[in-house]
Structures are given as C-alpha cells and as structure tokens.
Length: 130
Image (cartoon, rainbow, N blue to C red):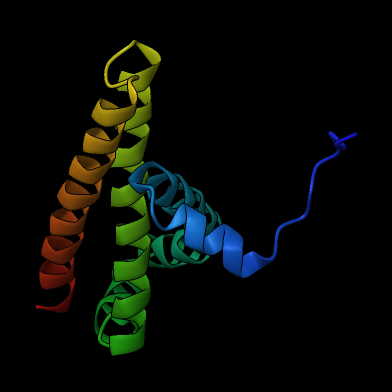
C-alpha cells in the first residue's frame, strides 16, 4: 500500500523543479521583493524624516548620504523590489478577475511581467546612478 503522507524533497530537487516554471519564478521573486521592501522601509523612512527636518538636514542628506554609492545601491534595490512587487501585484489582480488563468496564458503573463519589470528596474538603475 502506497503512503499518502507528504515527502520532504531535497532542496536541489525543489529548486530544479521550480526553475523550469516561469510562474514559480515570478511567485518566488514576488515574495523576495516583499521581504526586501519590508526590511528597507524603516531605513528609508528615517532618511526621509531627516531630510524633512530642516533645510540644513536636507542638504546633509542630499550631499553626504545620497552621495555615497552604497546608499544609492540600497535605494536602487528598494526601487527594484517596489517595481517588481507592483508589477507582480498587478498580474495577480488580473488573475483574480479571470485574465490569464489557464496554464499557457499564465506562463505568458509571468514572462511578460518579468520582462517589463526587468526593463523598468534597469531604467530605475540608470536614474539612481546618473
């Protein structure tokens, strides 16, 4: 008699199965982008609060903090997470109303969403680092 209990698969097998599906990739990246946003919001709110305190603080934030390439990278990572999370959320909203629910159309929608968000993230990178 075959057991109906769940089986724990090794991580390598889970990853190899999920990397073949664009829907799984989109879902995993959506979760990662949510975690990135959750972790970076407090730091960026602190910087925003400092910049709004006075004109002198704004100049300090503008020149000293955002003059640092590491801070710009963190801002770009935040924008990348925000952009990806936004487009993935829109894709999920369309799926909730019945658009791209079938297997092939869902895969196409996932690839389209990944491509559009990738292009937008690259554009945000040019904006932040220029």
